Structures are given as structure tokens and as C-alpha cells.
Length: 281
Image 1 (cartoon, helix red, strand yellow):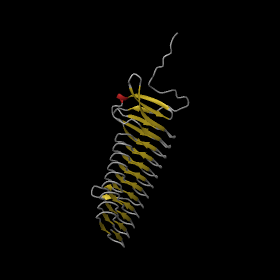
Image 2 (spheres, rainbow, N blue to C red):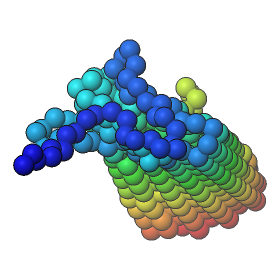
Image 3 (tube, rainbow, N blue to C red):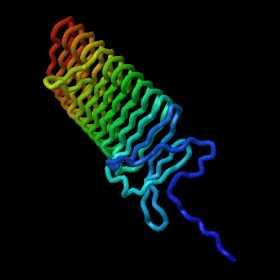
Image 4 (spheres, one colour):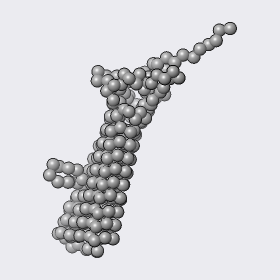
């Protein structure tokens, strides 16, 4: 009696009514995945055959395509979303994710490498996970989470929520009323480097330090800054602001506007600057 054998054949699965995958390896050895004008769901995973051959599996809208892991020698997986609400997840730690959500409310997730995630227009959710990541929100009300690693988060326009988590992070909310939380590590919140000094944009922002030696820059708008543990530097520009040093030996600088400066525990230094300010040691 002949015994039927199951054979693994890398390639495109039976598609039925599904769209053909738009994934390929470019000249530089990077894996390129292109979305459609519809809502796309893309995940990139590792797959090892029973006889030990390693593949990169790209699953897009329910259909899978396989590439020899050694053929992705460039080290990047790039995703280019279309106009829909897209989901992209890179689950291969050896590959760096470079993902552009495009228009729509997108979810982009990196892994253990140094990822670059750009949400594009829409209300996007970006998650860097481990690695030293750069997350760019663009227009819309975005949620950016750096997780572990020394991350750079840019909210841009809109009401954004930026969370650095572990690592020495730099968080810049941009225009709009933003929430910035540094998490553990020595963080810079609410600012970006202009080449000479730190600048923040307009908006009524909430900046939260945590453990580490943090720098919080409120900029324009009515901002609330809380340094958290350790020795922090808090400063604002225009607007009626609240600065709270919390634990540690902190420096609080009010700027223009009627500001409230609260040192908290520790030996703090406070400067009200212009305006009718109130200072509590």
C-alpha cells in the first residue's frame, strides 16, 4: 500500500478569493511588504522546517508566503501601508522593522531590533518593544509606546500619548494637548534638540518623569510637569504652568506666566521668572 507523504513547499498558499501577496526581496536584501488600499493585516514570523531550514513567513490578510531566512541578508523588513486601517507586526527579532502606516488608523509593532515606525495620517498605535526605536506619530491622535530601550518618540500634531517605559528616552509631543510619560531611565520629555537648545511646541501638556535623572520641558501652553524620583530639571516657557519636583534635588524654572512651583522632597532650587508665581519648597 502506498503511503501518502506531506511535503512542505515554500511559496504562496491557496488563495481562493484572497488578494495575491505583495512581498518580495529587493536588490539590497531587504524584505518588502506592500499593503493595499483596504484594511491590511500583516505579520512577519520565523518558521523552521522539521529538517532545520529557516524561513521568514509573511502572512498578509490570511495568506502566507515564505522566504529563506538567509536570503533576507539586508536585515530589514519594510512595510508600506495604504489608505486603510492597517495592522503590522514584526515578530522576528533579527530583522529591523521599517514601517509606514500611511493613511488610516494603523497599528505598527516592532520587536527586539532598532525599529522605525511611522504612523502617517490617522489615529495610530505604535509599539517599539525592545530595542532603541524611533516612533513617529504624524497627524492624528496617536499612542506611542517605546517599551525597553533608548527610544525617540515624536507625536507631531494631535492629542498624543507617549510612553517611554524603560531606557533613556526622548519624548516630543508636538502640537496639541499631549500626555508624556518617561518611565524608568534618564529621559527628556516634551522637547527636541534644535542644535542649540531644547524646544517644545504648543499645547497643554502633561509630562511625567519617574525613576531616573529627567529633563522635562513644557514649552508653550498650560503644562503640568512632575519629575518623579531622583534629581530632575523642569522648565517651561509661556503659559500658566504647574511644576512638581517630587523626590530628589530638583531644579524648577517657571518662565513667563503665572506658575506654581512645588519642590517636593529634597533640596530643590526654584526660579519663578516672569509672572505672578507661587513657590513651595
